[in-house]
Length: 207
Image (tube, rainbow, N blue to C red; front, side, top):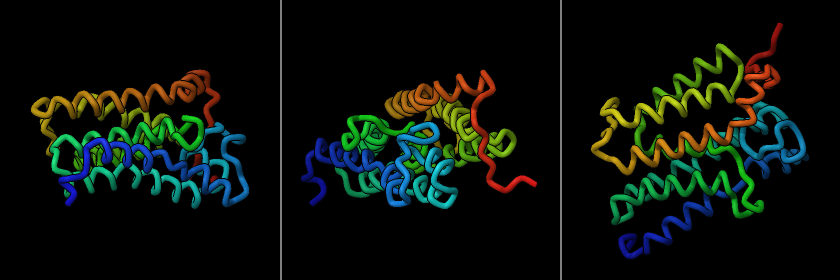
């Protein structure tokens, strides 16, 4: 039955799912409008910082699933071979430009992470390891996120870790575009990192 679903319907559904502002919803449930505190961003990082670590983790998982689930469904049920990549990208765009909040969304890191888990899981595992190391050493989520995005923008072009490399040119181009867009969305964080005013996040209480 799924082969009769119009490709445009897949893409639209992925965009609408990607646009669900879980960070904002979770914040509101806890009595916090994340648009008015911290970085004023509706993404998981700001939820983590302003609402609480547990709630930030829940927001992160929800945002990851927004990118992962559409890709998995398209891989298993869509007739067109390009749709897993297409719905993954549109779910990330939905998170960044959510139609439910006047097209103002998050930075897209977690949703892009979910999309890429579905597309190139081993490559994403390496990027996540890099993120974890950079974050652990610096206590800057933004620096870890940008480092992982930069790694993916380069690594996707090579046939490593199960990735097809340039044999799948559309995937290379679009993954690179998403990675660079994620970095661009972090431009304010990058400016604060350079000026030394970026807030650190500690996973464990400091003695």
